[in-house]
Image 1 (cartoon, rainbow, N blue to C red):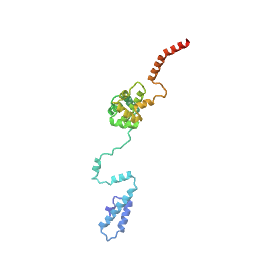
Image 2 (spheres, rainbow, N blue to C red):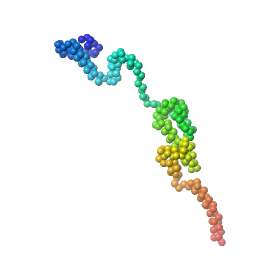
Image 3 (cartoon, one colour):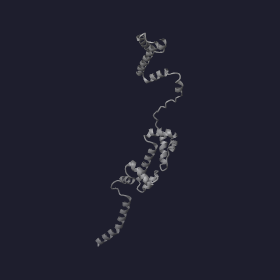
Image 4 (spheres, rainbow, N blue to C red):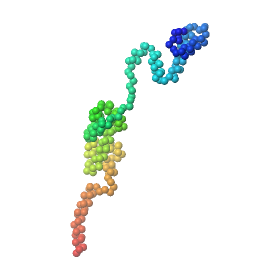
Length: 226
């Protein structure tokens, strides 16, 4: 009986003894030993169900065989997935400056990462944590914002505005502008013109009409005086 009850708790040892005592003497020792082992295994499983996961893992590790130890020792540790930190403010400002200076050029992720002083992987994760969008999305929004400023100048053509903010064609610029703003650049420019405010062309035409009408007015006044 010592080989059965060795290495177990006092509680399990008492239960094991009770099982052995309740087993008829007519049974073979092998059968009695097997019943005792089955009882211990069953009670151990039930007991571990209420044990916290950390304690259960420790108990399983303590009862693991020596043959499995080298396998576990060779396993790679689990990679903890921590939330990436936000891009530091001074790094973010450097990125903003770079985008503003190169808004008409092709801006790559490697260029922004270099401006921030980080690798591409760390920069992309920290930039998204800071702004809530990917770097490419942020660049497009900055292009559209700059385009809206340029469209407020009446003399600029739409194709010129598109090229100045990094688009290769007017069609591409119009498509992206409509996607973000909801209307085309031309309609947006018209919507920004205050109602009733004269346009440059109208102003020049009004002055011309006024100047051309002066001789007629002078002649009419002379006729009335006569």
